[in-house]
Length: 401
Image (cartoon, rainbow, N blue to C red):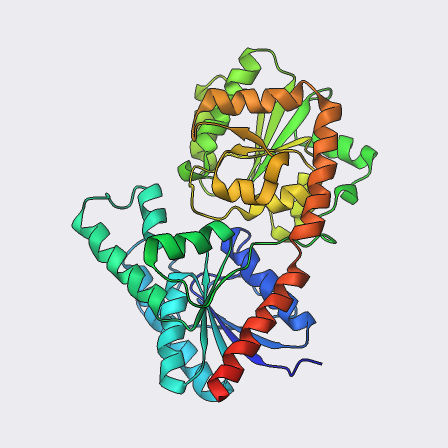
């Protein structure tokens, strides 16, 4: 039996929210707990507690206790307060390993690890500067890019080990940053008992579709994630408008936040009716499977070529065929079973990929079943937990030696 270890996770975000990196933090912690480890998550003062998790929170900013974290100068204050709380936990709880999520968590974890002689792990989910370029925060030839790039290089050098959310990210660390030592691909996974195709009976499924305003006898495309430009939501709406103009019997269920009002207006301006596209707003993670079960086809139009896309794995586990842009990350998840649109960001290509599934529902169902099987073979959190334990074991034994 593996000797239980104390794992201090540092999450520089308002954990738990119902998207992206929060799901990875949640499922890694639960997988480690299931193997008998002690996990404590240090995070910002806002967020939702999750039953069974040991979560401690930093203090609120003194000047405004209800301030929501975002991409602004206030983020520095959040991270300083997070560092102080993590430092306190390291002094009193005495963890065996510090596991830092995202770049800020990795930096805080590595600094504290060096102070106390505790090995640190960086949970790398994509290049910081790459994401800033994708989101339009900085320009490639600017001084800001040079500064952020140097900071990212420094953060990547510091931890004792790095785990990556995709194998593509591991290659990026080697080719783009020169880090080859102690880099472990640890792809995002999915809870296959939670995300499963039979969550709703056929009668309940039909009733809920009608309750949401989805017309009968139409196929339903589902999207669940953040509503943002880099997620490809504008491209999805324009592709749907193209399909409806061609007479395709399809509606789209767009689930997520923020920006519902913005994208509802975009849909209206494109001539889409409330029956063509339904916006649900935020969907809690624990209700995601029952909403995804309303779909026939899933879509992941994310425009980043480097970031992970955990929603794809949830789609796969639900037995849904998946349409996505052709990126290395999507190829890693979907393999030859993905229905790919190319080039990246092309609206007509996205519409045509969706149309190919709409035209052949039987084939779409078969592809979905095979994707569920692929998720079962390659992307389970239980296996992720075992891999993390091996990495922790190597680090702690090396540290003792």
